[in-house]
Structure formats: C-alpha cells, structure tokens
Length: 210
Image 1 (tube, rainbow, N blue to C red):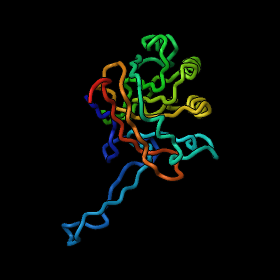
Image 2: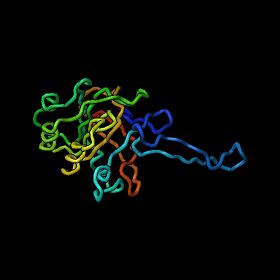
Image 3: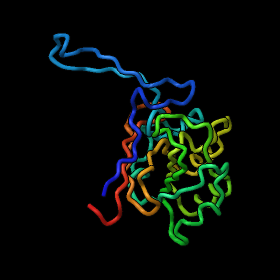
Image 4: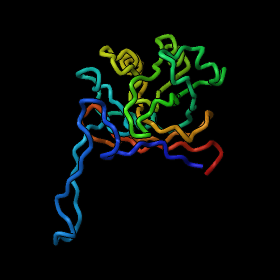
C-alpha cells in the first residue's frame, strides 16, 4: 500500500507566522475567452510539505537545486514520540531497530499543520539524539511538525548539525494515517534553483508491496 504523506500547498494551509502564505491568481481563463487556463502562484516554499536546503540556515551553503535525490528515496522508519515532550531523547527513540542503520527517520509528533492550525510548540531532537542518529547513518530526518527545531529557536541547532553532517531535512509531513514501522520513502524535492527550500510530494510504501 502506498500512502500519501504530503500536506498540499494551498490557501487553507497555515504558513509559518509572518511568512508568505499561498495565493493563486489567473493569467488566462477559458471562462474569459482564453484558449487555456493558466495560473500564477505566490508562496513561501515552506508552505506544505517541503525539504529545507542548507542555504536556509547559512549563506554559501547549497541551495534547493543541489539537494541529493538519493537521500529522499529509500528505506525509512516512522517513529511516534509524545506530542507533549519538549526534547526527544535517545530513550524516546528506543523503539527503533536495535542494530540496523537508520538512513531515514520520520518522526510522528502529532503537532502537524495537517488539521489546518499552526501548532504553538512541538518536540525536537535533543543533541544526544541527533548524535545517536548520525552515528547510525541517518541521511534524512523528517517531521510532521513545521520544523526540526523549536518554534522560537533562532540558533536552529538541529538544522545546522544535520546539514554539517551531510544529512537532510523534510518538514510538514502528514503521518496521521501511518503506523510506526518500516517503509520505503519517496519524497523528491522540486528542482527549483537557488532558493532555501523546495516543495515535496512525499509518499511512503509498505515494504513488500507493489
């Protein structure tokens, strides 16, 4: 079974407070006599499900068109954590496979914008948990929350550490219908040149299914 875990870009989807919301206009309309419908959108690339690029947190780091495709395709583990937690510690991740590498981790916090409201807060990885995941070969950390860092953070320590280690960041997933377990993730970022994030259509496929 394939499950779509994307939150769409659209006018009803909450943007990060202060960021540019999604809006759509029309350049041509068939109803007005044109031969085609052609739309034009204005939006932050952080609306809906997206991949952050390293440029998001540091000038001179790679932009969205340099995100490595292979990091966003392959085995992934979905893991639920307590939505009222402040920090996700290594002990909170004890349900992960004990010995296997974890190339892609998708954290289900229940603090998602999928229901149409921007959350006040959400759990974030403690530094010890980030280091544990990097030691186990993580290449991508995905979250159903709006960010891998806390809402009020200005240092963005989790972003920086993951990017410094060559790992990637996927945000605003919709994991409400996805039980914990092992999946294949397919979440290709759009190849938009020179910006700080890219919209993503993300799906997970149960291992062993077509």
